[in-house]
Length: 456
Image (cartoon, rainbow, N blue to C red):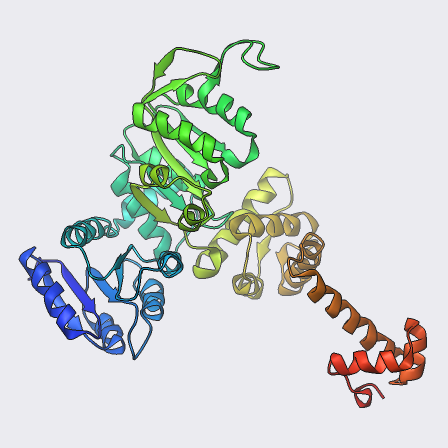
């Protein structure tokens, strides 16, 4: 059995592949070279691989497309992207967005290559101990059956005993705080405080006061001294949720606390030492925030020593039925309602939905069903009606972000269509109904590609 890590090099430049393979073999790794990206994907279906070094510009298939396949089919394999084109921030951001571990421009610096390979191999997802994962799920109240969640909890178990800062990413409602609690539960700090704060809900002054504390008289309304959450969490864990929604000025102050291990209350001169395990979370792409000058790069690297991404519900649909049953049972118990259960067809319909709001949206719909369902069994028709009502309700809150003229054009076209339908395609009467000249009305029909024959 070969216990050397296997690194797959995918690049249509054979000379580059041979050069990199020689370096990696001297590091003690086994290498496999594929100059055709399609053959590389076929190889991945048959053989185990620990790391992929992937070029972006290739004739047969773009490297970003290959990356997409790897992330979907083999998410446990880290991918380092390389490119011979002039270094491009947009390309690097696109690679990061699609899930690459790192982006390296050619010619690759030897030290950077070795460090990147070492760190990528260390980041690999650990083997899942299903019995241990299930214990954590019971203790924390995590409901899932997908392999994705099992792998995530295995990663949490791996990092929990350390003091390494963890960055949790994922869309709103996927359960980032729940995962943070799981990490705390698995750590030696489990019997000490766990505190959480949504950084996006407070002004900069209030955020500083909440996290660092304040002394009496430091600002209007500060009637007494107050401990901040860093002091309250001393010895334990703090979750800084939605960390991307903070100002650059606050980020600088937070960076000082993380580097020094000391906090200074607002308005105070004294510093207090704290020992806190920091977990941060965000639903934004921080690489893009950094490129836009909205997030400090040094803070990003300070917080992101180990990152865990939680995929949305639509990418782990096998979790939806078990979650729906759990949420229904919970809603019935909490609100003292009669017991309900979903029919198989109802669960199948729920499983087909996109759930853009993830678990929060599913919970909202299931709670409404628990309240308004009349029969003990919630059938597919009841679920369909509830989903339709929810979609219509959400449309009221959706903001159209298209350019103004594009929205105006669409509205004009809709008015013309409705007028033509109401008048059986008679252009004169339709124009009169809208209060415009017939010749102008006909021009507008032509502009929108409308023919009177379609309405007569």
